[in-house]
Image (cartoon, rainbow, N blue to C red; front, side, top):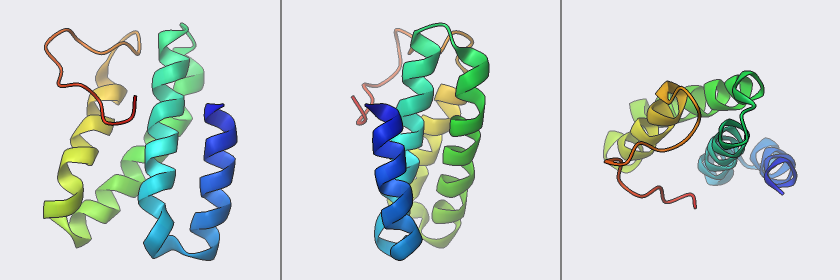
Length: 94
């Protein structure tokens, strides 16, 4: 399901990046989290790196709107096993 969402949002973002890049970043973040939770950490690296890159760019343009989501992606990138730490705020993605 996560891979399908990435493909869907990637096509939408290609046609209209302003409207759909945040959705693509969310889908990539979700895919990375799903892969990490199933022990596929190496596979999760590419999507989380792409999510962080997109969200970093978005946060530079509009920090108030995108910095919280960038922090979430950075947290996913930092989790050694892809699972959320117990003290982490609930993810908007799940």
